[in-house]
Image 1 (tube, rainbow, N blue to C red):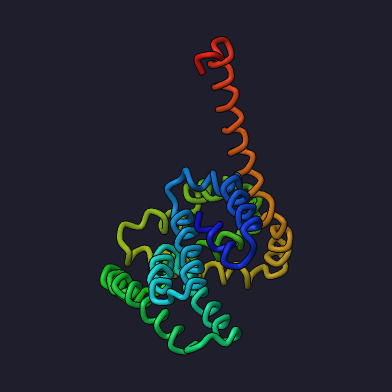
Image 2 (image 1 turned 180 degrees about the vertical axis):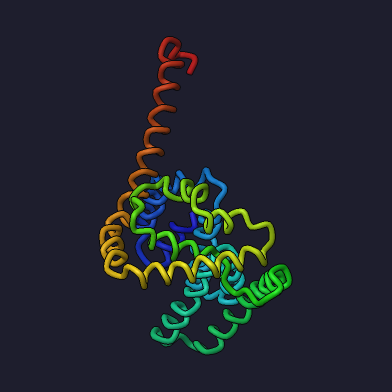
Length: 239
């Protein structure tokens, strides 16, 4: 619904309907909507943020962007992109609008930053497992296209195991620092192999995970439809 409203603000009603339908029927979106993950809430909050911006509600947009930032910290980048757009489009009172949005965003984010600081006993501005994201690609001997690589490494790799099973926020931060240092060391030891593995992995950023998700979703839908059909076919009148 938010996608359709946002498209309506920038295009014709027909295109807005098409955008809403495409998103609502996208297998990846359907797959994630059934999972308890931050991506679902994050996507909604970011979309709603841009919808509020299109309606001129910059204070509320800052609040929803703050909530999105708590979900996934890199959402703060959208504040920069929105600020640039506002100035490029020469909106009236552009400076005040950006400041108001930034202030309301930080009003939401600051309590969480303080909570993380207290829990980890040190300033923690971004805590999203960046260490492991940097470390795993440096394991050039692993098949980076294999979606099962994460669960396998969480069990077999001592550094990742220590990170994922950290008992406190402070221990998690320490484990992440170790992963980051080891990742840098791995790159320094084999820079050419690392670069080649990254080039080989590029297509999988666009195809592998998406195709697996969509195939899984489509198979689930087909199985559901076939089950309903088998149950209803003998007694179609009652279905």
